[in-house]
Image 1 (cartoon, rainbow, N blue to C red):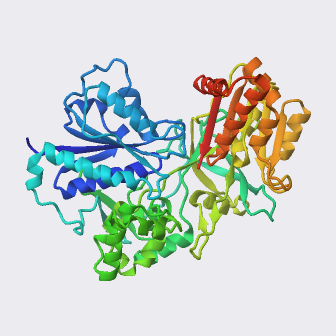
Image 2 (cartoon, rainbow, N blue to C red):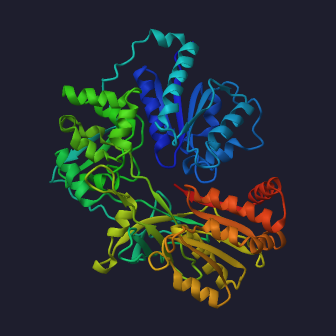
Image 3 (cartoon, one colour):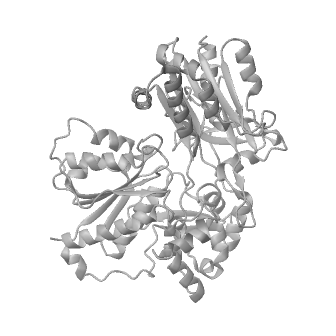
Length: 594
């Protein structure tokens, strides 16, 4: 049997599955295999019947949903009309990336595995279920899974074992070559253009929305800086409903861009074009020609915590003995605990790593920048306003991420810090954005009551739905809101009070730090069991949770089941069953994030 061509297809939301797929592709290249790697939606799925060896690497998003770049593939694969044995020629393997703190852990990989078997594919090894919650992260599963995969492949294709693989310290060719232009060639400004056509903004064509205001809504003495931001989307064709999310792609901080250019001895004003070394397309988001400043500011994720693949690639450039040994240790399976202590626990950034390895950084070839640094990923925020109340506007509630680790400099969230730094009072500021359907769906029937539990910034989507329902004259609205202190972080307090006065809202609050015993939203849910039982059992109410995924959602569910038992007189099993039925029928929904 001749050597196979390996196809690695990935579904990735935050870039982790993409990084894992590219790692596997590099291992294939070192084994001198022909390999292609691409997002599932860039692949013509009808060609699967002609493939011999495919690895699917996919993450799970939201409440068990496939990532955006595999949604079309997913729809096609689950068509009932596909013949049962249509993939009987295919050898494949599935690796899932998930987080066991979410209820639908690795749901997409498990479902894909089942469907491929139904279609007759030969699955070479058990589906890999990597878990972010593991002490060593996803690599605890990925490493042994990769080893098993290559073991299976060499059994299937014995000729492979006769081929001499490339050494681990030999650099593979870069994906792109940089061609620098001299100053004489005409310059072109890289800028955000407001699209003149009537397309709806998307990831590939974001709309530059003008920032209207950027207000801090927590007391100046409060530890957490939270911003209420409004953006003008006039002329964008953007439409959205309550529960939808707005996507934004942040920029790196100017001081980081400057430090990066100094470390790599790059002039930020230099312009270049890119040419691929194989048949990979040049990233559509990068203009041709492009300035180094634009590349570093808007594209390379230099402020991210590096993954292991970063060290694997960096180690191939190291000539300094000490640095080479350290990078090799961080790249090895045995060195993962050490890497976690160095990188993940203190949240050290790629830029800081470059500064820690000056000799290797000096050896870095610019052609490898796009292999070494991932692309900045878009961030999603629940829309906190309704077009009924604020036409042509999108409002968001953003907690600015800033915390201390053992490192001297505080750690900052890239997108929240970037948004917080924008000041429309200093002149026009534009934020490129697009809108995506959210996972929360609200009832269309006018009489259906809505119960919402939204502590902290989790209240954002509920403000949107309350503005919508108020405009439609719907009064059966119950909100449980929790924060630390009534005087410091009670978001939208005056709005809630106005809605209550007008008869549109029943509000229950939990201010955890305003008394000796901590009070949280779950306590308020438990205290109001009679009302909740009546609304859910007799009036067909829908129940929603939004907010941080740590303990809150599970605690609220427990409190709700307790309310069913106390007020409804049902058993623990019946309460469990009731909640499961509500979830199945869309009457219980949650949108949580970690």
